[in-house]
Image (cartoon, rainbow, N blue to C red; front, side, top):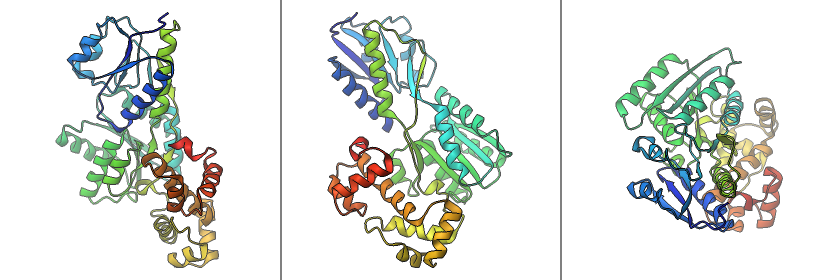
Length: 373
């Protein structure tokens, strides 16, 4: 048993948005156990640190397998936990529950009533291959087809060729799941260059929910929220138990995805009904005012009764339900990506006060706003 280790080493590549989420949660949880930590970027210094007797255990995240750092750890007998899934290792890994993600993606795509499915992943990445397999297995009950492509974004010409091959194999309209937001951003660019409409021709869904990439893409990318904080916390607890003498038995510990943020790239109303599309666009532009249904109907060129019937028939929800969903989605995004006060977020989402907003948010999500900060 290690009662007071000198430090826990964090070794990571910070090139991804979700890595910081994992590291922050791991550090917070580890410090709660009274364990000091040190951070090392993937480098020769990190390799040398492994031999330091004061290092009691390691937490790895987003390590590039090609650097050989994994191989350098082959003879290390210290507790190691990794919050990535690029290659198989002898130490425990904590990552996304790919089956749950596949269920979430498939359920969302079902709203579009399409039977053509595709997947774009990252080349030579174990996690990407597992995600593809889970998504393909989930779509096998459909009469349509499933095709996939693995891209190396560093090889632009090769990536374009593989994406071309994918487009040739699949009929439009289709549903496309991407391994991560960076790939989704590239796919969106390729679709625009080829004159393909998103989501009319290709409905695009990603994983990660990087706010910056979604904003830069212009047409917002729908994305499954990566459970970075939960993964980091789980990894910290595994490592702490190991230091206390309880070695983890499972090779891979799976954490379910949190939620799915629907944006323009896979909006199920984008092309199915022009009246509904105009109504939702008007609601999105006016979430701060929370317009009445009569006003929304006029903006959509419809009567109130006709609009309500369309929403019930096509979306199985009321106009008010849709407006509340848009307001709360906006609130959730502001909670996750800004430091605005509750009063400011309430105002931005059409609520009269912070207390009113908190009650509405809890009723919609089942948890208080503070849980999503």
